[in-house]
Length: 217
Image (cartoon, rainbow, N blue to C red):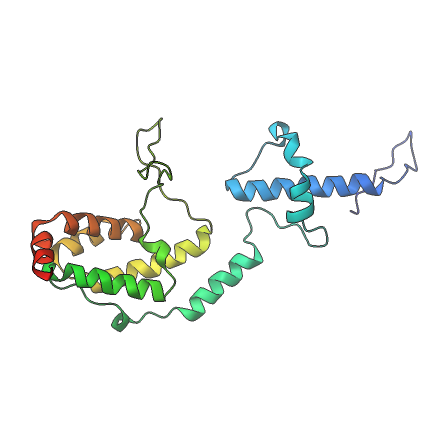
């Protein structure tokens, strides 16, 4: 809003920039950082759709004209507060999570863990590690790489902290040979969703799990 035209030899005292031009420029900058944050990448404004620049929904509902524009690489205050609140409320306490010592105890272990995860408001940690087609209910396949597309959380910074904490819990409580193998195979990425997905996939398809479920029934 403090933008000024530099004087030149031809025009020593250029007229001030109209306030409307300054407001439109500020909206364009805010639009760029808003959509770049959604894409998590820089945008080429030469190819930016004009309709998004003049969109009344963004100018009226999303753009905050009285607030400072935050760069798309910088975390929003709401994200910082969410991470701070999570770190303050969640404490590592192994007693709240049932230890998985025996393959036959998979069903009660899973039920107990899901209840604990729900109480910690961490249900996103046991979602499938890949994108799911809402219409088909199957994993989405990338047509280029022919591989399943990884799940992308809305708040990546908060999700990273939660995944690290949740993976640490998996390391502490998974004590069967198969569970420890699955955890060790994912130590580098600390993908807690993939650990839970592979645990469920193995034990739900294993013969011992089916036999034990028949005994419980």
